[in-house]
Image (cartoon, rainbow, N blue to C red; front, side):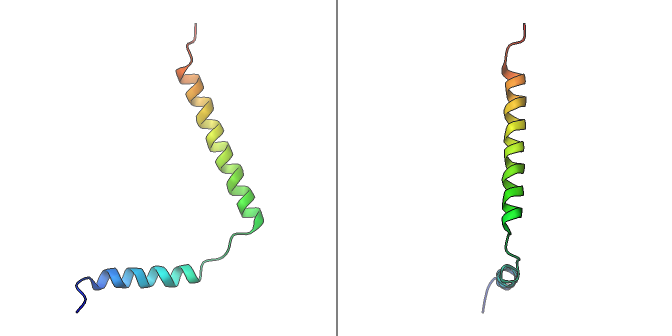
Length: 55
């Protein structure tokens, strides 16, 4: 008897969901990279503004 039937149920559901997941297109990869670049640029800008000494 399985002690954790809910865990087995969750893993089976995740496996089934992954088999049906759509593949990312080239456009979606480019969009994701651009968004990550914007997030990193915003972080760098904010940290620079916060940690530089303003006279």
